[in-house]
Image 1 (cartoon, helix red, strand yellow):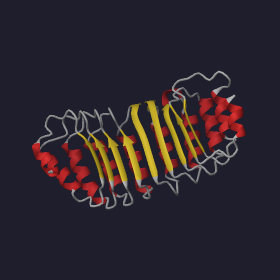
Image 2 (cartoon, one colour):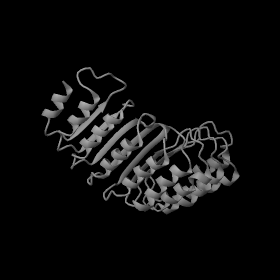
Image 3 (cartoon, one colour):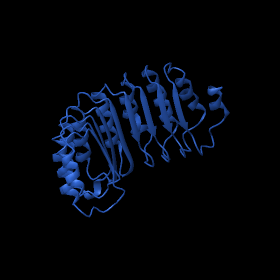
Image 4 (spheres, one colour):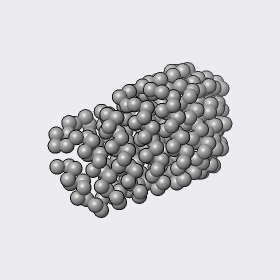
Length: 277
């Protein structure tokens, strides 16, 4: 079975698995997570499309993570927070922070953000990383994102200033210029940032004030070479004052890749396109 196979691969350095809601017939999810702790040389671990964690499963995964002393890249996507207790989520976040070699983290949550203290404990642990250089978080399938959660992300950014790749997905949330102000500040102090990706698709509350604050943050990133911004369906985003955002792009002298999505924004007019001519 899969558990026996995993345990026999002592030299395995990269392990990626996508469940896609399959049912494990020959072993329990708990047994599978325990077996991951038998891989002492693992450098990269990717677990995708496994939403149905129990508290016991997450604790077993956390215990295995504690044993991965060489892990550098961790990707765990579609963690359903509604089915998990505060204690198990705290234990999970603490186990991640115990991996001192981690340089890249990519997490995707779904469901309701069940309590502010849980979100806080996650980011308090992230603040302890010494070598973290790449951070991605997808909150597009969560509910209840507020100024508090945004401020926690911003606080992390103020304490970890060595990040060179940052990706945040807020698709569908009612974020606005006020709630995102701490975030743009946190981004502005990332002097080593090389790649930045922000997804605000279907964030209907966004207004031109956010583009103004982003216009202040972007020139503070002297080494940025890739920028990806999605504002699809953000109908209230563009007006005449938005021209300052496009002007700020000209300050990014090392930018080699620019991806902008302004789909279905009727006011995206020729005055904006002038800056690309």
